[in-house]
Amino acid sequence: MGYRAPRSVDIPRYSEDGRHRGHDPLGYRGLRDAAGLLVHPRQLVIVPEEAAIVRRVWHELAQRSLAEVAYLMNRDGVPHRGAWTREAVKDIVRRGRTYLGFVVEKRGRDERSGRHEPILTEAEYRRTIAAIAGRRRVGNKPRPFRSYVLRGLLHCTCGTRMRGEAHLQRGTERRDYRCPTLGCRARRCPADQIEEEVLASIADGVLPQTVIDAARTELRRRLETPEVAVAGRQRARLLTRLEQLRKQHAWGDLTDAAYQAERDAARAALAALPDGDRILAFDAYRARILALPDAIAAASGTRREELCRIVVERVVVRDRQLETIDWTPPARPFFERQREYPQGALGTRPLSDDAILAWYVA
Image (cartoon, rainbow, N blue to C red; front, side, top):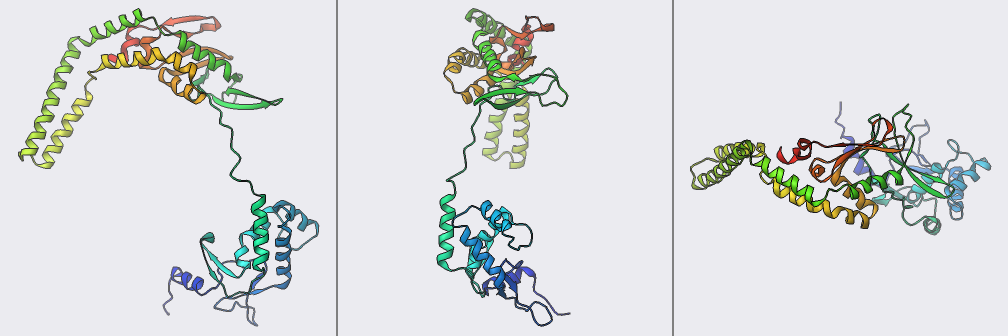
């Protein structure tokens, strides 16, 4: 059995030799011998009847769109391998360089002169391509960007995260939040209404300075408890240990492997300790919270979404009404309560001291 070169080796030889690969394009047929077998090496010959169809399609495209040409060809009963469609006409456009007598590879990135006879002239090709380019829109039609302030935060009472949807009614666009759960009877919630309520809760719910100062004092007292003090001493020892390891490695007292193992162990123990800069974190968050109402009032829709996520962790609505707002753990000391509507009646549930300062003393 003789050796045959792999197919990947044959491909460049065919293309460099100016021979067509693949199915016969409309207007051409592979040359066959008297027995009806393909002649090798392969060669394309023009089918006059099909070439006339290609020329007609190409001339029609100079004045009509793809869909209009497809309709015209079907109306006139022009034969094809199936019904004329927009894609069938577009396929002829894609093969335009082939009809000029070129062999095209890699989706048009590479081409060379072919051995087959062209069906179109250069003038015919350029005229139709210019007409198609003139009808083409520059760029895609921009999609309107809609901002949903509570994107990913708003939940239905069934527990499902609600989705933002836009509807056009009588020329006016309306944004809603909808529960996607099949069978859920929750009504659509107007986006503008619920977003304004949440933003108003953020602006109006910030505690007075005196209450925030009292929370800071309580936080400092808790951080001075024996458990936190022990953690502080452990942190200092681990930092000293890391510095000593660095010096020992620099002096050559520790191998690379031993130094990396000791260093990783000390870093892991350090990461497991509670953060020692909780007071600084508290003060930094307070500055952000106090500036938040003015920032929200001046922000765009997208920026409002980002600012809302600083303090809001979860929002629940029931029957188009705001039921609860869960604040993010760092923001809880700065807001008096979580909003709650038990059994449909307006009410509030104050947060406990443990829940307020849990993030800072953890």
